[in-house]
Image (cartoon, rainbow over all chains, first blue to last red; front, side, top):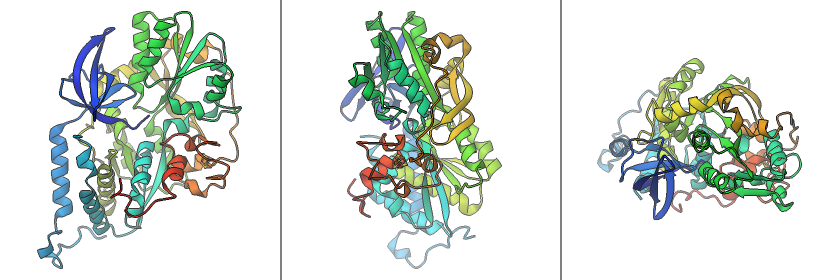
Length: 92
Length: 370
Ligand code: SF4
């Protein structure tokens, strides 16, 4: 129940006074309530829990996270620099 | 699929694990709060790929697992009544109460229905005006936006035949309870990303400071979890007791303020009993007096039901990170997913079920085969 997965909002409409949308999860379309993400637009990706979008995903942050992580974990991975690794930070 | 594939990149996961190995200088015990993360960790074998200095213990963040026995008994008492349609997430139907489960009520002719969302339950209420429709509103902060919206919507639509049986729990008081226990071993936390997506993480900062434990807000894909562990280990090695956000694409410090406002409008804090653990003060949400007409406990007069838990099941110790599932004598023998003795064996997010499904055939190639 808590395995909220991201999906792409492909349609937005009103139903019984609620902001609703169709969300595509890797090819499976489900209806979700968008009342808690009033800024949502078609094309946005949302995390959906039990039929409600709880958060919109930020493309910028996603890209930055991956880039930053690559930088951190790939530093010193370069074969030429093997044996010449920078000392571990804060060994204590 | 965008936002999923990149976070399952086996190469980057391995490099991140390698980085953890390079960073760590001594043993640390971390707890992942959320059952969804427990499931992912065990499924991908991440715990077995980590350097042995990192011990992961599994936390109480599975809503099915912590719903107290007496709420199952109350649910069963309501569901057995004529003219009631009892609606719930599927997992709850198999959670053992004192005397059978919700499935057994259905077998005896009760109208118990599985729904995906509380809005489905509302629809059933609209379609069946001559029946009382009750929704089993369980969950952590992640399901609260849905459950409160169903109440507001019932009010707006003038639906008098809809009510909810509330068993809501909140993470921060549980973290405090774990850290405050004399037997606590947890030195850092992976906070449950989707709880933080709703609530933000400002509430966690004073806890990190008071108990001197770092926390990393963590997502659910293998790379998210590896990054959360790396972040936490880095903080521990540096002696920094802060809350870092390792799930920035979905979580901000303030959280979803629209949702928080609506939750506050409908729910108020209350003490809540956790299955196997006991009462944790202020750890629950219940309906505010203004919404009491939607409270199924009052509507069906089941407030006084009290229940004693089975002494066999050690799920309480597992949910506090004090024991692992395979240390339970009943694990895999008397207790299996088909015949669960405790709730942690029912839900996919429960540690006992995760171990049962994945631990037997786990290999160090767990990552590649996923
Ligand atoms: S294996 Fe079964 S009986 Fe043992 S702790 Fe887990 S749920 Fe309880």
